[in-house]
Length: 586
Image (cartoon, rainbow, N blue to C red):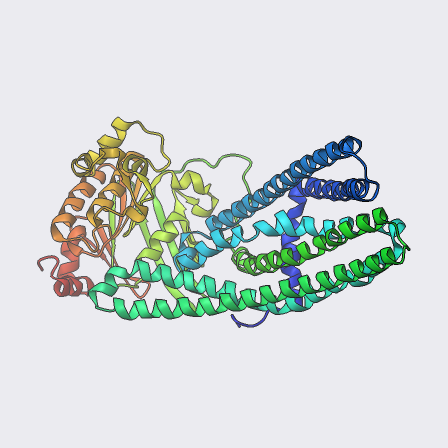
């Protein structure tokens, strides 16, 4: 169904969605149409002045001083048209920019509402294409297409008002031939619309594929699969090239059709005017005036044909945006009239179940308490549900059944921002953004350089940061490009020290690190854990042997709990995992 052609009802629904945003930019859009209409009136005036000048010089044999006032008026009309044209473009750009900002805000707000748990299962390249290229593709729809629809009606009608009194036969020809241009524009545009739809879907898939390939480039190199992947990328790119050329062929065909009918129509007007002048049925001045107006009569219709492609591109892009916005987000709780009281930091999972899909439980009957200052570890095989528990605690997911209580208050009753302000989260792969190291440590917090440096020192990061080319002002790339995995992890730890949160959630912070770096991270975590509540999701069992309690998760259930020594003595799943991984002595 992904490649199925879009139905007429779907296209109308998408265009109705696009037009819904015009309410927010009604004033600039109206101003664009008004300035465009003024430009059309100035165009008629320009043609009349030019016809008067040429008639005066060639037919009436007037001297320069006699036509000089008309030349000044013509120059003023040129300048006025240039100003009006620039003003029309500026106002149209502003209208489109406002709509794009509004759609971006709505899309980002919806992504925030969906949460990281949802986005983790989506393809980043697809989302990036939708939010960047897709929204940018709406620009010409608002800046050109919508104003041109109104101008394509007003300007030809305004020209006809002047053409009929001057030479009514030319007016009849224009009235008869004018509908042919939008008619063939729609006929040819139907095929272009289907191709445009297919192209946008291919662009989204190609972007997602490229992004995945770039993220996995190191793995592809390690397994010697980079050449095969390069060939796959070449095939995908070639397929997209063929689709693009097909769209361009149809676009050029539609332009050819529009130009053909406009040219034939202008030629018919010119032939009739020529014969009327030859047989002296028409004076030169009105005949030349009508001849100058004939190309301008069809120009708005041709421009509408060009802008029609902007409409098709916008509808193709809107399909992806609307699909994103139509994804159901968790319903926020009703706003409270008073701020919720801050509960004591005692966490309680009460018979919590969770499932991404009905009938496919991820967690079943999770029941435990995390007391203030306690260090609790979650261990278990991959896919057992450990990370899902942390996502529930952070509020990114909601239980299918059961309650998560914070000091006796249901987590769903707490304001999300207030709750997250009390938590520091260190995931397996911390995200660093393009910017300076100091800004990546602050990450929205207000702190001076001394506080940032103190936090980095506690995280064991100050030494390597000061050795960077510009120290704390060194610019790092997206996702920490230019830094090692251990350095990225230590910067993330510095964030946690700087935030000074009550609850620390560690999601396998030492996974994929060499033993020396893992030991350094472990020492920093020990400092971070002092006088704080900590939930540790562990991959290396060595990192949890000093935890106050250990919960062993398997197939979404708690199968064992206790401290390290008691679990080893029990010889259950924890002892088996310990022996297999050889992380701790049995």
